[in-house]
Length: 247
Ligand code: 13P
Image (cartoon, rainbow, N blue to C red; front, side, top):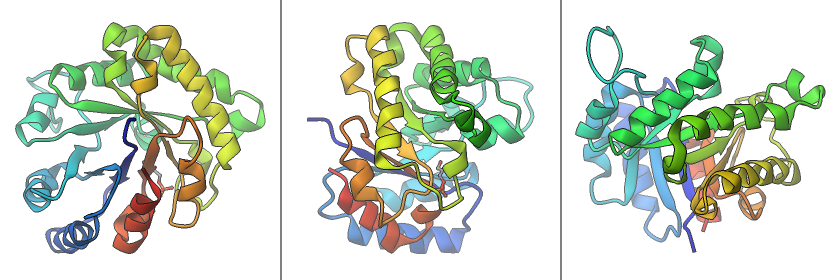
């Protein structure tokens, strides 16, 4: 059976000192974990965190990747550079990138393609806003977001990780109920099944105010294969509780 994946998204948080304390606390507590574990860290800390997690079984992820391969793109970080630093995962299309940096479905699809070509697994984030949910458009929105990635990546689509992150649940303390989340995950699974015979291998993570108290129920849903955890991933005890709830 596939192992669930619990990925922390530190967002723009951390420092050399606090990262070391956080990773060391995690490393001390993950011994009996049944799931896969990753931390997606700000780019300047990739090298530091790669060193800290060495031998712990925790993987390192980035939070974004350039749509370009190389060249005159000041400030950008390429997929090849991430690979150079032993990065296993890269978030693409996080709602904060879509919202604050104007990332379109097409850009997200191209970023996923760059990551895959470099041997980095893209964690493709999809999710509806509150207004979209309230007007009954949730399925339409997440299907449109995933369709772009399927279209661009063809048969490689079974190599991605998907994260369903309802925008209204991110950082708000409001979580989709396990049934609400499962319903959307089932829609995404069906869409993947139509694209690849290997759809059941694809991990579909839930993200949005996942915490120590709600993780077990969310992670027991048939199509929820892990979590993408923001705030709670910065607190070792909370993140370790989520990891302990996963299998
Ligand atoms: P929170 O867990 O803080 O709601 O963040 C979720 C998220 O955006 C993870 O990518």
